[in-house]
Image 1 (cartoon, rainbow, N blue to C red):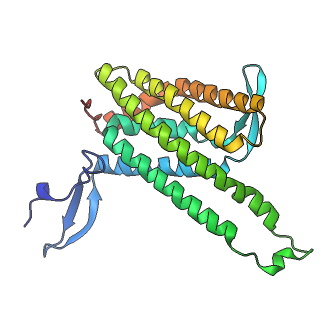
Image 2 (spheres, rainbow, N blue to C red; image 1 turned 180 degrees about the vertical axis):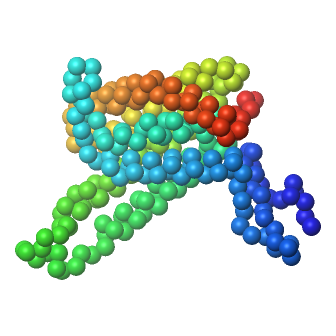
Length: 259
């Protein structure tokens, strides 16, 4: 029988996430069973991608948020940011740069798939009954106002997301190298300062440059970026708590400092 230490692993996705193959009495292989590290990676990836896509879909609504003494414009796509912030740092910390890049590309792929489905849904013909004066359901105008405009947000988000995530991953790794794996708060917050500035400028400009004047657009960019920085700082205790849960309760150690 083939030795279990020679069986296929998930190391090409996330180093240390081994996939153990359960074999029956005749040597046949069944579905792979992930170890604790692999299960955590799968859960973090699923939650990250869900937060990314949901943020893209809801991002067309602007809300008013009291910030620095003024009521500032913010997209509701901002709401999932705390989740993605925590997940990005956990993925970087426990699985390293290579795995974080894989998750970034998976997220991009799912956003592209979402864009394709939304585009097909918008292009699909409406039934004639929906044009009747007594129709009480969703109208083509209302539907298209949400989802047709959402296509632009999805495209802008994908561009901003890819650039910002790759920058965040690189900065996180560099700060981890410089601190020899210490000062978790510094690499978590420090990587976010630069990457989220890039993300915020790109997505807000691509989405709102035609709808808002320069002053409002600049205010939206500044408010969004400062809001993200405040969240990044305020979530520092949760990052340490998440780190403790993963290491102490799940017994998973951080990824070694990469050279």
